[in-house]
Image (cartoon, rainbow over all chains, first blue to last red; front, side):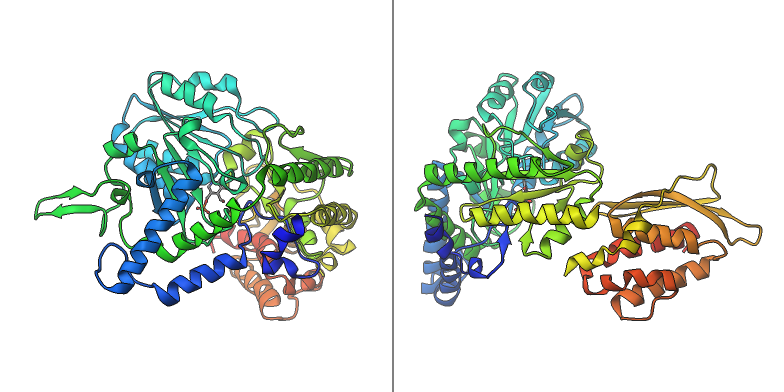
Amino acid sequence: MTSAIREAFPVLGRAGFHYLDSAAMAQTPGRVVEVVAAHDLAARANVHRGLHEMARLADDAYDAAREAVAGFLGAGADEVVFTGGCTLALNIAARALAGRLGPGDTVAVSRLEHHSSCLPWLALAAERGFELRWLAVTADGRLDPAGLSVIDRRCKVVAVTHASNVTGAVTDIPLVAGVAHAAGAVLVVDGAQMAPHGKVDPRALGADFYAFSGHKTYGPTGVGVLWGRREVLAELPPALFGGGMVGEVSDTGFTWAEPPRRFEAGTPPVAQAVGLAAALDWMAGLDWPAVRARLALLTRRMLDGLTALPGVGIVGPGEMEARLPVVSFTVAGCHPHDLSHLLAGRGVAVRGGHHCAQPLMRVLGLDEGCVRASLAAYSDAADVEALLDGVAAAIAVLR
Amino acid sequence: MSADLYGQAIKDLAAAETARLDSPDASATLDNPLCGDKVTLDVRLADDGRVAETGGAVKGCLLCKAAAAVLAERAPGLGADDAAALAADVAAMLKQGAEPPFPALAAFVPVRGHKSRHGCVLLPFKVLAKALGR
Ligand SMILES: Cc1ncc(COP(=O)(O)O)c(C=O)c1O
């Protein structure tokens, strides 16, 4: 089964190439590249603005892409906002909610967050005068349910990641949603790491916003999605201003377009959205229970193999329950940067550093960061063995 | 091959202990936000305004630590202009293939071919220049 999946990715045919950096950016199927090129060669025009044939083709393709994302999320197309990436999606959500926040209010953000999910709120806290409260994590890098008690009636927004880009821990979103909604808060979920692992249903999870990126979901760069619960989007002002998000403009003001376009100022990433739809279509053809089971076995092997090496510590849960195939680790006496570079010399692509998660690094005491190996549907046993051999060899060089 | 970067000379240098100075005459910190390296350098100045002694703290990879150790050896006697020139010379060694400005830096010649690591070696040299007002 893996070989059939791997064949869809021309780059994986390179000999001696072991790509374990999919949490930063997944590889993309050749088919997706072809679809993007075909769109640009045959239907390249701006959307929503023209009556000529190309414009109509572009409109149809863009609308179909929105429908495809809606299908992936079990949502309505009117709830799907295309953005330039997950970071932009999360910033748009924060900006749109900003007017509701002021002195006396709080926003609760988990310590697991990627900078894209916590910095918009830190920046707004300074601007709007509300208090930012950090939700605690456990020593093994999961959101600590006990820490949810800081969410009280003053809390207006809760921002959590569906899955950590560092520890791989999957957050119990329904639990957080229950607490957030009981306090009257809006729940913003960063799905950047979860979406690459199969369909998600943000409404059923209890989210009010759900963001993910195209490039981690086997799609193109330059596109992301902000899903917003219809009832919530309807009440919010636009976050960015320009063409496409507007109704009527007078000398003194303007009316807003209906969602989702209210949140899509300017020319959207049309070809990239079409490519994302192709990527989601490719994902839909996979047997996800089988993919997940296989990746779980590979993850178990990584955890066991790494733990058996001298000085290795796993950053994240040791058990397989509610965790993604994302494994971060440290090696005593070996800096993550040196380890990653030595692995790269053996064709093993991993990432070392703070992973855009400094608040988490600090609380876990990871002053120098950690190394992260992350799998995707195309990862195989050879990738994992190359990693384990490579780490063992790197330790021998560095010690 | 990246393993050739980690010769015994580099590893021995990186193992050197450093400590902050008590009440230094000047201090500076720089970090490399992409990789998380962070170097703080404390400087005690002689009467002529040149470096008498350095101390500091390095949070960084082996290459960064080794470079900081070489710098600590070399720094006494340097003035602000010398420190700025030295940082430029180390950059030229890495990026333009120039000769190492002094023999101990020869251990870093293999880093030339690894552009993503130039910043690790340069960081301590930039911090000294900054501490001396450059
Ligand atoms: C958990 C998480 N959130 C957000 C982002 C940012 O996504 P993007 O690169 O699409 O802006 C990333 C990617 O690095 C991530 O891992």
